[in-house]
Image 1 (cartoon, chains in turn cyan, yellow):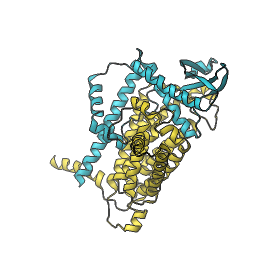
Image 2: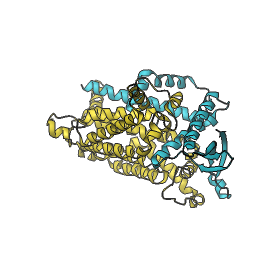
Image 3: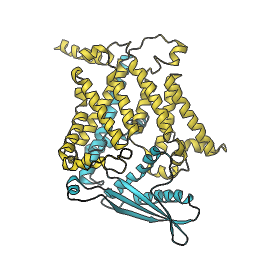
Image 4: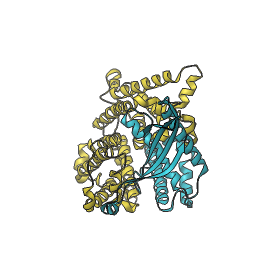
Length: 186
Length: 305
C-alpha cells in the first residue's frame, strides 16, 4: 500500500513538474521571441509528453493541466471592447462594453475571452484560422448585444489594446490610451 | 555506506509516512472551506450561467469547441445538454437540474455526507463547466479542480462529517501522505510562479507591479490612487523583488519551522493584496485556503523540529 501511495505521489508531482517546465519555457520564449518562435528539441519532447492522451486527461481531472506562471514573465496586456448599436437611420442607439451580464464575477470571466487577442497580435505572420475564429466570436458577441435592442440594425465593434504608460512615461505626463487593434461591422 | 543509504531511504519514507492519526483539523478545514467556497463561487455567476456556460450562450459552445481541444473523456456541459436534448428536454430545464445537482453535491461535501462520492461528482460537474467554456477560465478554476480531486482521493469524510456520525467509521488512517501531497504541490506552484516572474525583466524594475495595478480589471472597488508610486518607484521595485522572493523561496522557508509562520503570513498577505488590488477575490481566497490547509495545521512535532 505504501509503495502504491508513494508511486502515485511521485507520478502526480512529476506531471505538475513537466507541465510547469513546459509552460515556463514556452512563456519565456514567447515573451522574448514572439508567438511563432522555433521550438527546440526539449520543447518538442515536453509538449509531446504533456499532450499524451493519458497525461493530458489525467491532468485535466487533477487540475494540473495549466502551468502556474501567473503574470509571468510579463504582465499580459488587457484588451477592451466597445460595441455601438446602430439603428436603420444610422443613429447610434447605445454604446456598451460587453453583453448584458448581471454579476461582477461573470463580467470578469467574460472579459477573459479577449485575452486571445494577445496571441493574435503576437504572431509575426497573420494566422488565418485565428483571425476567422476571432471574427466569428466577435460576431456572436455582437448578435447577443443586438438582441437587447429591438431597433438595432447593425452593431459596430472596436477592440482596443489598453496601453498604460510605463513609470518613466507616466512621469513625463503621458496618460493611458486605448489603441484600436481591430474593428468589425455586423 | 549501505547503512547510510538505508538511513536516507528511511528518512524519505518517514517524510511521507510518519504516523499521524490525530491531526485531522487540516482535512476538516480543507473539506468544509472548499465546499463553502464551491457554493459561493458558483453562486457568483449563477444569474449569468446560461449566457456564459450554456450551449447557446453568448459565444455558443460549437464555436468555442473550434478553439478548445477537449478530450473525449471529459464530459462538458454542452455535451450534457446535447445528450438530454435528444430526449426533448429543453436547455433551461437541463441547466436548472445541473445547477441544483452542483449545489446539492457542494452541500453534501461541506457537511461530509457521502463525502468522497460527492467530491467526485462535484469534480465532474466542475470540469463540465470549465472545459465546456474554457474561454472564460482562469487560475481559480484549476485550483478548484485540484482541490476537488484531492477531496476525492483523500479520506475527506474521515472526521467532522455526517459520514462519520452515521457510519461510525473508526478505522485509523495515517494522514501524513495526504498532507505531504498538498504541501509539495503548493511548493511547486510558488516555485514555478516565482521563477516565471524572475525570467521577466519587468518584475525586477517595478514595471510589472505598476502595470498590473493599473490593468482595467484591477482596482475596481476601492479605486486607490497609485500615481504617487511613480515618484517612489523604489517601492515598486521592492514589491516586485518581494513577490519573486516570497514565491521562489517558498519551498525552502515554508519547511523550516522557525520561518514557516513568517512565510505563511507573507504568502497570505500577498494573496490578500491580490484580492484587494487586482479584484481576484476568489483566486486569492482559494489560495489562502490551500496555504492554511497545507501549512497552518501542522502537527506540533513538526513545529518544534
